[in-house]
Each structure stands twice: as structure tokens, then as C-alpha cells.
Length: 481
Image (cartoon, rainbow, N blue to C red; front, side):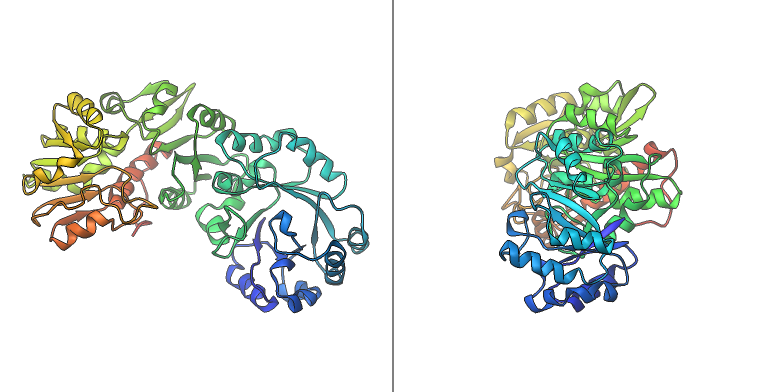
């Protein structure tokens, strides 16, 4: 089930949130601690107003809530609310047997026993979850993973506690895969928000239902994703998931924040992933874990697509073709003959190789000159330091920006600040969020032709889709426009 955590300060406002999200949710959580005082006192009427099952929660400040009442006053507020027909009540791990628990049992309200850890993932998490079920109907653990290893440990809950009714919540950025793939942790529901997250890392109910189809994930669902650091800004799920839906493929594509490639491959094996996209900074790091690579990966030295084949992982590179498609006609017509490539990282490797393969002269500009020199030596092109960018004013047809400068949170940054465009240049920034980087804004003011990162993302994503599924990307889907 998808559970909407209600965040309005009034009962009417909470009903409005349910109405807005009714097509996406199965159940709601009423947080008494987020209601105004007078509204919380009337909470017993809410289940009749809601029209769907409701979880009753009154979260203390120590557990991430706003309730600063004494424990006695908090208990009285919960008791009064239980006059209504709530389906569940959430009682914290350290709360001893009380009138609240007795009243819930008497009324047939199921008890969720929960604990919250905003610092990390406790080493004894499996035993703590098991003990919670001895004092309630359902165990809930809301913890804060800080690494891909922590995420793997939380997915293992499904095996370690197979027959235990439970809810596993991964809070923060690292926990997002756990929220989306909640069924793979053995959780019977996941918490969602109505826009602004109520808890760290919450995904909107709309995205869980429509973008990820999270409530349809089962043991047969093929799992794909994108790995990187950062990665949560990605638009790739909006390319692949609608495509899966159109071809009626039981699959899901989601982002994985990664800090350790070896640990991620362990997670990928555990989840039986079929493939994944690779972005900054892991396009080289994945190579040592691949059993087979294509000619493009071998020549470029960079991999952006990994697919499971019998007995091994195979690496491919769709950046090459995805980058070229938007500018191919200009190259073929001779409009683009020489270029500046800003950056010498994993993405620039595919771009430099693509341009050289098409006969375009390339000069690589990079802050660290030795990296530019290494990339230039492999591709037989020129190189220079980024500080000398202005020496190339009016000398090139194409400028390609491949670094993370201009990406969140550096929206106001420009890697070639002060560069004067003539207006004849084609300027291509592979960043796609934001669409209009500061570099592109300056280029637009000068009258340059612009190409956006979302063009490359969509083109290379369509090629990845074919590698993942064996089908051409469906016509008529334009998820990034």
C-alpha cells in the first residue's frame, strides 16, 4: 500500500490532501502532532471524514515529530482520538503497556510498534524489529542509512525476518530506493507526501504511483536504475518507466546514490538487477567489475550502461551516440569543424572520441592540465588549461560543457566566466537540471545556437532502453519536454 502522510494543520486540510491524492494512495497517516491544538482534540471524527483507512500517530519531538506534551497529556490525546474508527495506531518502542494499547486492542485497531533512528542504522536492527512484533501487530523501523552498504543491510530484512509483519523506512537521500522498492524489504506499505516531504527522503504519492508504479512491484519485477553521486536530480526514471509501461514490461527504474562501487554490485546481485545507467563519478570505476565490454567502451575508456548477460555484467556506452544525434547534421554539413570541450572527466571521454571520430578538431580545456593532456594524447587532439579559455574566442564552431559546474547547487557558476561569444557558435551543455545553465544563458544572449543536456539524456536513454529491453523506445513519449 501507498500511505499518504498528512501534513495540514487542520482536519479539513487533511481531507483536501486525501482528495488530491486519492487516485494514488490506499491509506493515510494522520499526524496529530502536526495539527493545531483544537483540531487535534477533534481527531476522532477524522476516519469518517477521510473515506479510507487511517493510521493514528502522535509523534514526539525525540522521534522527529512536534509533540512536546507530557507523556500523560499525549496519552490522553491519543485515547480521545481512538474514539474514532482508526485502522492502526502507532505506538513507539519505549512506551510501556498503557490504556492506549488496551483501548486499541478492545476496538480491534491494529498496533504498529515503531522506533526511529535519525543518526544511522543500528547494528541490532534485525533483533529490534523482531522484538517489536512481540508487543504489537506490526513492527516499524525508520532509520537513516549513510551508505550503499547500509541500504543493502536494510534490503536483507526481507530475508532475515521473512514472516514478520513490518514497515521498513529508509530516511534521507540514501533511503529513497528503500521507499520505492518497499515490497522488496517485505514492507506492507510505504509512506508518501503531498509535495513537500514530511520526513526526510519522502517521495510524492503521485510519483510512487504513476512514475515508479511502486505498488505493482513483485518478485518478478525486473529492476533497473541509475547510479551516481549526486544522482537524485536525475530525470532518467521519467524516460524509462513510461517506456516500460507502454510495452507492458513488468520493470522499474530508479536512482541509487552510491559511495562504493563494490558494495553496489553486491546490492545489484542481491536485487537481481537486470541493468543500470552509470553517471558521474563512476563511469571508469565500474570497468573492473565487468566481464565484457563493447568496442566503444574499450576505445573511450568510459562506461555509462551496464546490462546483465548470462554469467556476467556487460558494459556499453550510449553517451557517444546520444551526444552526437542533436548536432550530427551540423557536422555533416560542415558547420562544425573545430570545437572546445570543457572538462576531462568520464562524460568528456565519450564526447571527445565522438567528435574526433567524426573528423572534428578538438581542444580540451580542463582545470587540471595533466588530465586534459592524458585525454588529448589518447584522442590525438589539443589541450589547454581552463584559465586560457578566452584565447579561443571566435576560433571555434562548437563549445561543449561536460563538467558539473552549473549543476545543483552551483546554479550561478559558469566554467568559462567572461568568455565572449560571437553568436556563431553552437553551445552544448550536457547538464540537464537546470535546463538553462548560466553558460547557456550567456550564449543565448550572444545569439548562439543552443543544445541542452536533456537532448543528450533522452537520446542516450532511448538507446539504453533498447539495450535493457530489446525493444525500440515507444513513439510518442517525450518525458523531458
